[in-house]
Amino acid sequence: MLRQVTYISTVSADMPYEDVRSIVSLSRSANAQREVTGLLFYNGRNFLQVLEGDNAVLRSLMSLIIQDPRHAGVSVLANVEIMARSFPQWSMRLLQLSESVEERRSCIDGLLPAQMDGATRRAILNYAMLN
Image 1 (cartoon, rainbow, N blue to C red):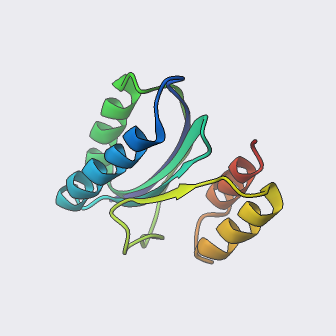
Image 2 (image 1 turned 45 degrees about the vertical axis):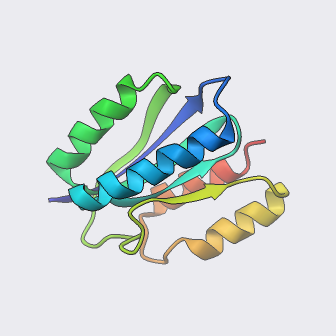
């Protein structure tokens, strides 16, 4: 069964951006092996990540994420069964949110596929409003 999990978390206060880039680099390789796709948003304080893949694989991956000391307060926003991946071409894409709130919301809205689950789309667009 194919699932899509979306979560938000708070980044460790002392994590430099270089560490975020390193996490993404390692995740791309590991996710490709696990057949996991998705994207990671980073605004300097929080992560919002969308993961897609086999249900058992995502359960295992979320257990690792929850135990990872580099972020805290992991909160699952959506965990839905999907018929097709929204991000089949990305083993992990990083989007750092640094421009104005209006620009980032417009950019993200244009990036998200039309067939994406409505609740997940709203969660991502609401995240884009965080400063």
